[in-house]
Picture (cartoon, helix red, strand yellow):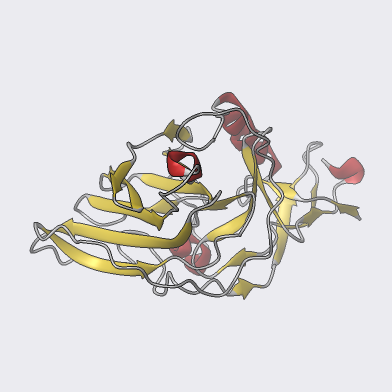
Length: 258
């Protein structure tokens, strides 16, 4: 058996996994605090926690709120990646975009806001802001929303159209209290599931790895596993240097590991 830490979720086979890895490397970014000061930003993540505390943030009353609460599982150090097609995982049908992204399957735009508190006094100031980025669509396009600061809170907001896949990467640095806000246009019948979100974003419960048959590089089939994931879409540690993530307990039985 060849044991590996799988990169970029090979649910559609090893050939597609290689394509995903290429997309991630092509869009490699340098996620630093907002002042862009040179720092050591590796992918060493602490163990994901089950929940998060709840700060208070003002809401945009012009939209319809689907969720406004803690985002569980954010590691205390390093970067981590969120994105998972729950519908494809449940039905066994191929993802229309890619299986390692949330997918807005509703008929309306969904707006995602990630919010944090940070120490805004003393020498820290904006050097303590978190590192955050979004990844969008089958090409895994890198998107950096603007940081919006209000006192000692900071938020980043990005909207996604119907049918669009999206994910995000978070590195806390010295920020705390990660929070997720999900809104849709007022009057919409869309649910959290419709826009690709988990039912309980505040909880990051570990989901066991499952096995399946995959196509190897020599076109033979073998037993493989994409590895573990967490119930709110957390997949694993994000590598700053390689521009991709790694899921625990992933492996394949292909000869030579490919």
